[in-house]
Image (cartoon, rainbow over all chains, first blue to last red):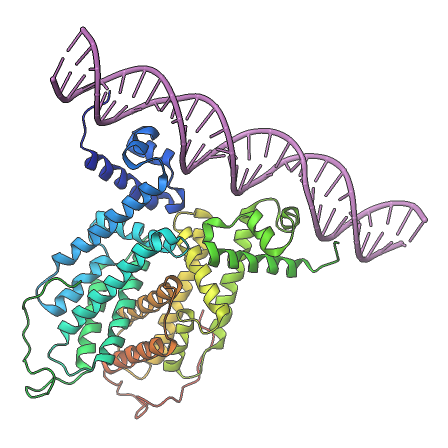
Length: 220
Length: 220
DNA sequence: CATTTTTTGGCATGCTTGTGCTACTTTATT
DNA sequence: AATAAAGTAGCACAAGCATGCCAAAAAATG
């Protein structure tokens, strides 16, 4: 029966099963037995690849999820405003795959609130997300005159909005027409831009004029 | 030891313990033993008031939470715009009590995603919340010319924003300076208002004035 | 073929829970 | 005081899980 197999592929397969199980029955129901049933593998096999404890499996799966989210950061548009629109794919997932991952991540985040072992990773990821939003917003407002503190507050708002969509799309069974969500986010950003005066060519801090598509694409 | 006691008070006391336990260790760790330890009661006693099963306790506690949220609906300001600002107390809780309830409710909502027994109640509550937001927004935009469909989309946005704050305040340990949140929400609403032309009708000059048409105060 | 390594399967134990059932203690009522 | 009711406590059993440990089966390697 047993064949030679790539360990990493096996682990990915298991992680996928864990995500499925979370989506189907919630993170609290992830157990070796259920993972085994879902993958068709035996409990012993799973333990073989991860080291006896279930927590290892959970930890690995969380790593996979975080990695995938981070990878999406690289698939954003070029235009700053459009980039912000793209971020909603974290929230209103376009593919079934992304939907599953969003749900799983939400469950992980809720669990991490009371589970010190995952708290650190989750906190770091959330922080990174907030940074990305702020950095994106900064780019989108580069041709506007806005103080640092105001930008901070606006980023907070935008971040909350995205979190809200993510949360909603994870919890509502129905949900979330993507065009509606995109429309809402872009409208918000547009209004946000309009709320600040254009930085005329000669304002002290930002000497440079609006340049749309340029440079730094890594936000973290 | 045993004294004569009001059953409802006892049940409230138990519900309070359940909320505490959820806040402290997550909803998946709520167990008869832990409730008993937290209340100082014996397991048997708790079972006496709720009928043998733990789910009864959970169900009752959810009822308490929903009821309390609904009650807050009645404590809003008079001015429509200010009312919307008030709604953020669902999200950036001012009192420790409200903070606990928000956390517990978030956990219940996540659990309900995969637990049919609670799904119905939670769905109804969420729907009611969305209705409240829409109704509040309609009042806030009563002097503006906005079509029904646009209002629907704006309500979606506002709702997501509130959800995002609620979620964030539940999950971040730190969290959420209330004035910042309030500023963000009111700014959003203000910009939202400015995005629509005044309705040619009667009302004028009050685009920023806090006085209110005191209308219906019951939103559900 | 013999041996080593990888992969798989499983047993046994200890722990936590839920829950049916029973018995004991205190209070109220007549 | 007698009796019923309400409240408290706990036992016992079954089920589910994590996990330490070990052994069989299947490749790979020499």
